[in-house]
Length: 292
Image (cartoon, rainbow, N blue to C red; front, top):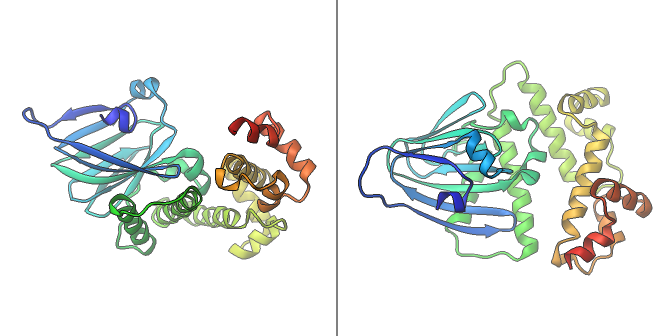
């Protein structure tokens, strides 16, 4: 049941005897929100499990009781009731449930959350307490999604998913413990957040973002060089990903391709078409026709 609901893992029970567990789930756009109850156990995502089925998702786990923890990327975190952390399903991890447990688990696709994270491999197995400002917002949102009775249309569900991904990145970014690079990492996180908020602005530029986060343009370029793609390349990638997503959105089927490109910051339709085809191998119109 766990394999079907999540990804292949190796389970080990604490004791033999009767077993009573449950998983209930709901979809909110690209997110899967699960409520889990089960006896004490340990859960491992091994290289063999990953070979059975890749897991291009992050798991955000929020226990509703004490006595749980997680290990990934050399970090170990113990969680109290209402705390949360993320683990990356694409790489090995371990979860420990030392007593019968209940938790909310959120599955977030890589392509939704990773762009918000300044350093994805440094964000895993980092405890976020619900007593913190942003952590409290995320904790409340998870409870609402897991136990609320309301529903969302496609457009609202996608907006909720985007906003929640941003909040998760902010919550994790404020507690990452890397003494030598903490301030640099937080500045990069601020820059990424500013880019995400401003993708629709055709005047988005390195100098604009640098001014908003309080650094020089040269230092901003250094921050992006540490992460990988340059500032300009990252902005282009994120705009193209937004367009690729929205071309498949039924709520925006009445938008022209030009309107959609303009909405995400492209001012030259021909340049947008060339860049889109270079990245995805098809034109924007071919993408839309294929979805239809």
